Amino acid sequence: MKKKNLFLSVMLFFSVLPMTLFSGCDKDTNCYLEVKVVDESTSDPISGAVIAGDPIPNAVVEVYQDNGGNVQDKGVTDGSGIYTTYFNAPAIVKIKAKLQMYDAGGNPAGERRGETAVRLIQGETVSAKVTLSKQIIY
Image 1 (cartoon, helix red, strand yellow):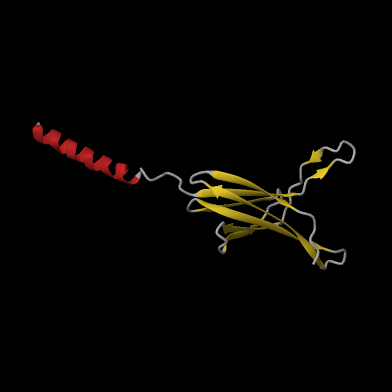
Image 2 (tube, rainbow, N blue to C red; image 1 turned 30 degrees about the vertical axis):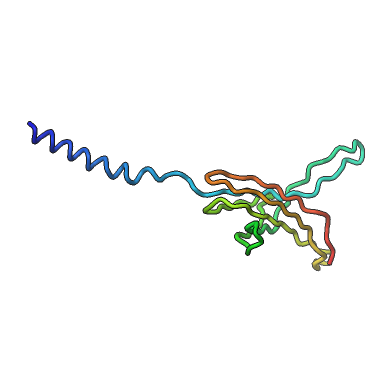
């Protein structure tokens, strides 16, 4: 009987051991970033109330480490003016967005720009809003 109990104890130990060794590392350690690019707010001509800016699709978004380093990630906003990405570690990042403008003939006529900075947090989604300024002509 003792041998049978010992055998069952050993079997139970070795069947539970892999589950405890390999299941404890499921914590999400990525840092998620959701950037919304919007048009500069305007004032209602009648009431004077500030109207929130409209989302801007197809804006180019670049994410830099805040220390002025190289571009860490780059992409384009979707139809809702949203760009999402993730990083492997927390950081403070600078976000720059721009939208190329064209004249009636389809020629480049400047761009609109905006930027902000946020702190990425491990395991969380951080939202940022970048407001594009009026057109810069060059």
